[in-house]
Amino acid sequence: MMGIIKYKTIHRETSPQKRVSDLSDETRRQVEMLFEIAQSSATKGDYNQAINIYNKIIKLNEKSIPALIALGHCYSVIGENYKALTSYQQALHISPDSQVSFIS
Image 1 (tube, rainbow, N blue to C red):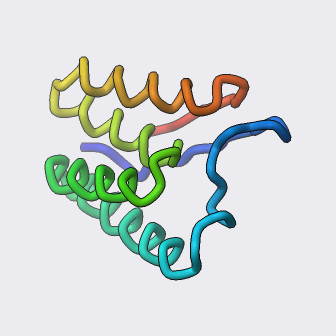
Image 2: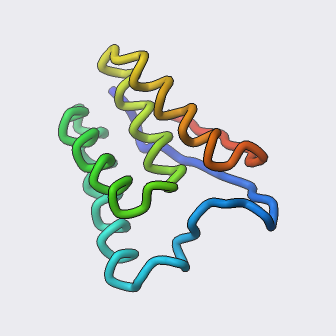
C-alpha cells in the first residue's frame, strides 16, 4: 500500500512552472482540497480514484509537479508503467532544472 507522498522541488528563478501563487484563490483552495482527497484515496489503496483526482488537479494547473509525481506513482503501483513514466517525464519537462525527490 502506498503512503503519503512527500515531495520537494527546488526551482531556479527562471523556472517556467506556474506557481500556486499565480492561481486564483478559489482555484488554489480547490487544488489543495483535491490534493488531500487524492492522497487519502491513494493511502486507502483506491488508486483509480486518486488517478482521477490527480488528473483533475492537472486540468486546473497543468504544470503541477506534485500532482504529476503523485499521478506517476499511482500509475506505477497499479502496473501502468508507461503512464507512470509519462507523468514523471512531464514533471521533468516542466522544470528540468528542479531537483525533484519523492518518498512513498
